[in-house]
Length: 353
Ligand code: GUN
Image 1 (cartoon, rainbow, N blue to C red):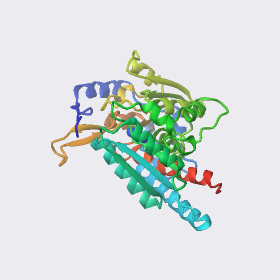
Image 2 (image 1 turned 90 degrees about the horizontal axis):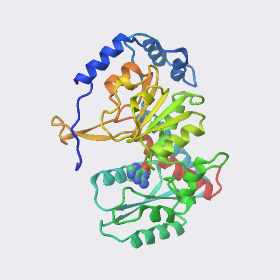
Image 3 (image 1 turned 180 degrees about the vertical axis):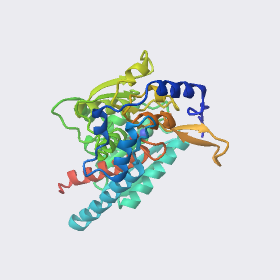
Image 4 (image 1 turned 45 degrees about the vertical axis):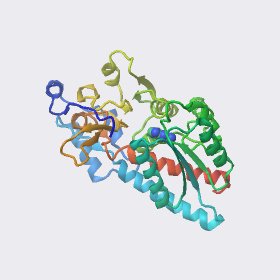
């Protein structure tokens, strides 16, 4: 792993004990409105009742939002739909992935996407191009996949090598196959009222799906998105706004980010900064979605590193009403949403309900 970072073990660091002291001075009293974040659409399970009761005490313990479990449920649903479609009209959805260069993290993501496609019965096509390929070569692959009727989704793994113009390449994908939802027309429609994008970017879509499946009501809440990337932060903010949240975006130039984050009922963090969000930054009862997947050195791991989130999980679970872990939170949802977008694309193209 090329870019491992050093980090402080947040729950053991001096900062953490300050935060814990602050929390002891201001014991957590979950406001009635916060409790609605714990209500599931269906009857509350024993564990959610336990979490709700625990959240009212001073040693609050958040519900863990299990992205791995939800992603598995969604992938099972997709597998069943893929086979229903194949039996009914003989069409198998196809996803084409273009990977340029040899970044290890990108290669891992692409391999995982490939495996997930195979498991769901979706055809997977790959183009692995060397780092020094030209933009024209990538555009040629895109135009081939645009024309290929067996392909219903096209994904160019980002980031691209620095000599390529990302905008030219993403714009070349036909919007009917833009399963990443990064085409400016799809993003533009996402930003506008009364317009429907054909596809929504997978990671932010996965965040909203997690909130939905855990019965977190978004309407009327204050939401904060940390980070403003084209892939996650910006579309996540647009999606939350479409769900009637009042949204603030905190980024690297924001003054006093803690103050703004502390007002949020829902936080989606996509900062790419290990353990940046401390327990003391979180409003009691808030719901925390951690998109960060940050490699940090770990001599105890055989790989020499491990992955941690943007949020100090050990502190967050004492303050929030629900938190996603890293790994096992948002990560598995991204691939599940990609499969869902590919299936939906095939259904739309073949007018299959
Ligand atoms: N790189 C990191 N995340 C993504 C993603 O969701 N889509 C693509 N195409 N590249 C990425």
